[in-house]
Image (cartoon, rainbow, N blue to C red; front, top):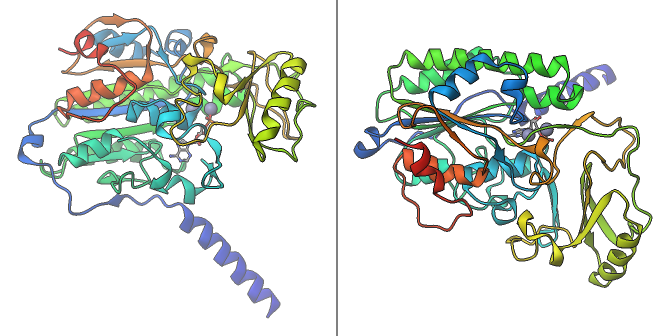
Length: 419
Ligand code: AMP
Ligand code: ZN
Ligand code: ZN
C-alpha cells in the first residue's frame, strides 16, 4: 500500500511539473487580420540572449555578418539599466524603460503588492498585472493584425487582457528544427490567419557566456551554432516568398567578472530593517521602516569600496531608475551597484564567470546587438549606438501601426534606416 501511494505521489508530482509548462502551441481562435492588415509586410523580431555587440566579429558569425551588410548594422545597441534579460526584452517590445514598464529586474519586490516577481515563477510570469506598456503584439492585435510569439518576455501573459494569437509557454526543450518549421507553418497560413509580427527567442549564447565566460571556445561554438540556425530560419522562410523583414537583436552583453575577490554583504545592512533583493552587481534595499533609510545610506556611503550607493531619490538621471521614473514604486529605497568587474556574492553557490547587469553607458561589454534586413530596410547602412527603446517606433512604422501613448523611445531611426 505504502509503495503504491509513493508511486502515486511521484506520478502526480511529475504530472504537476509537466502541467506547469507544456510545449503545446496556444491559439486564440477568434482572431483574423483585417483586409487592410493583410496587405502589410512581415516582421520577425529575433533575440539572441546575451549576444554581445562584438560577438559576430569576434567569433566570425558569417551568416549574420553577410545579412547585416545587406541591410542595417548598429555599432551597438544600448540596453536599459539594469542590463538583465527581463527588463530589456520588455523594453524592446514596449519602447519603455524598465521603471516605466514595471519589470525592473528578473526578480524584484513590489512593496505595494507585498509580493515578489520572479522570472522562474510561472504564476508571476503569466500574470498580466505585472506588465505595463503596450507590447508590439498587443498594439498589432488591437488593430486587427495577427501576431505570434515563439517566446518573448511578456508574451505568455495577457497584457491589457491580450495575448498574441499564437504563443507558447517558455521551455528550452523544443528542437530548433521544430521551432523553425512552426514559423514557416505560421507564414503558410491563409492570409486572414497569417501573423505579420513574429517574435523568436534563443537562449543558448547567454547560457554559454555565463557558464564559460565571453571569451571561451564554448561561447564561440554557441555563437556559430546560432549563426547556423539563423541561416536555416532565413532560408526556410524565403521559400514562402513573402516580404519578410528581420530584426535581429540581443538584450545585453556579457563580462568576465572578478570571481576571485567578490564583495560580501556590507556590514551597514541590517537585514532586520531591510528586505534585500538582487545580487551580483545590483542590490536593492527596501526599508521596512523608512526611518532606516537615511542612517543606513550614510553608513553605506562611508563603507563603500568598489561599489556605488544611491538613494531612490538621488539616482543618476541617465539610469532612468530613480523616484521620478519609477511608475510602479518597485525600485528599492537604496541601490548598490558594483564597479565592473566586481560582483557581490551572498550565496553559497559558485558564481558564474560571465555576468551582466552593469550600467551599459559605463561598461561597453554590456552593449547589445542590432542588425536588420529585408525589403523595408535600406541596404548597407551603418548607424551609431542607440537605445533599445528606439526599436519600438521602428517596428510599428514597418507594420504601419500607429500608436498614441507616450513611450521613452524616439523615432530617430525611422528615416535613417527604412526605405
Ligand atoms: P539572465 O541571464 O539571468 O538575465 O536571464 C536569462 C534567462 O532568462 C534565460 O536563461 C532563460 O532561461 C530565461 N528566460 C527567457 N525568457 C523567458 C521566459 N519567457 N520565461 C521564463 N524564463 C525566460
Ligand atoms: Zn539576457
Ligand atoms: Zn544572462
